Image (cartoon, rainbow, N blue to C red; front, side):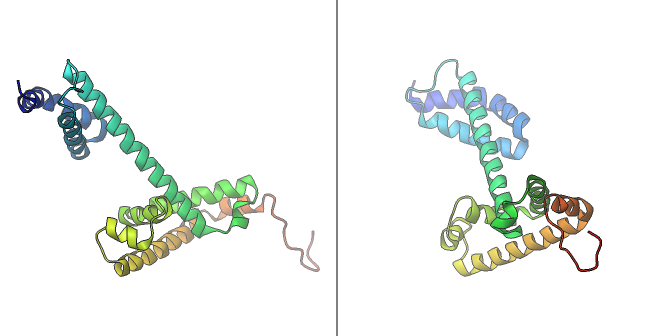
Length: 191
């Protein structure tokens, strides 16, 4: 049996079950992409690395691809949150007491979650992946000038979302900032 014939046989036999497994983990649309990637890996390794029985190996590849995708998504989100914190405050604010840092982090995460996916992706490319605007423009298939405008707008939307998140939680933010923050002393005011 040639490698192409073996692959065709594996594909016909296992595709529905691999797709069902991937779909159960990540939904239909992403499951189809993961399944395609699984069979691409199988094709590349058909000359000897695909063991018998094949289905368990394919499901293991699928599981690893899903785990890697989730890890990347989590890291992207965390770095976008870090970008939100960078915009939200200075290093001095971040060096404050624990309550302030926790409150600021929650506000930043809330603001970031409210942004469109395209804004989060753009902020992530710059903040987490450390790409320049020119490099990020290549990834997003747009000009550097267009990306600079998009980045400026994404940062402004993030700032507005941060302001809105801070405004919606005034008592919690105020109490967090009050802990460990000395109150200004006004002449004639009760201490």
